[in-house]
Amino acid sequence: MENELLQQVLQELTSLRTDIKNVHNNIQSLELKVDNGFSNVDKKLNELAKDISHVISDDVSQAISSQLRDIRTEISIIKSSVGEHELDLKYFKKVTIPTFNSPRS
Image (cartoon, rainbow, N blue to C red; front, top):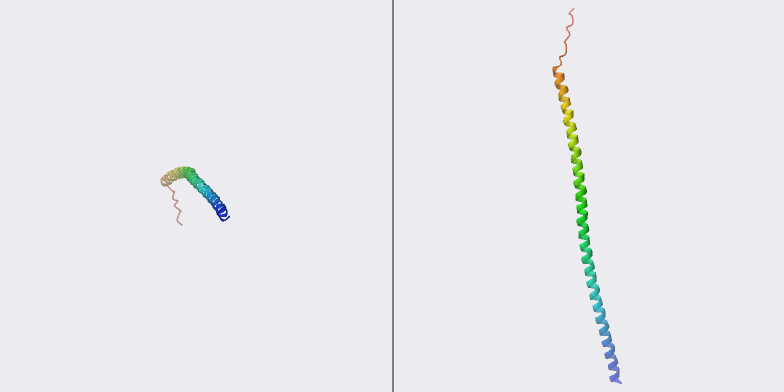
């Protein structure tokens, strides 16, 4: 009887050991899947970050180019305006202001 009881305990322990090994293997498999998943997510996030930086770089460069064009246009307008004022000043330099001699009493 004692021998049978030991055999049953041994079988149960062996069964438990097998179950524990299966659980351990499943956990390792899940850990591997999670690690691969995190690796894939990390890769995707890096790609997304690169794409975002390219989009931002393009948007920023377009905005800067637009602002530079606006500045260039404003400088041209200012040069033109200064040129017109120079012509006006040259004209006024040539104009003589008549002097009136008032009769003395």
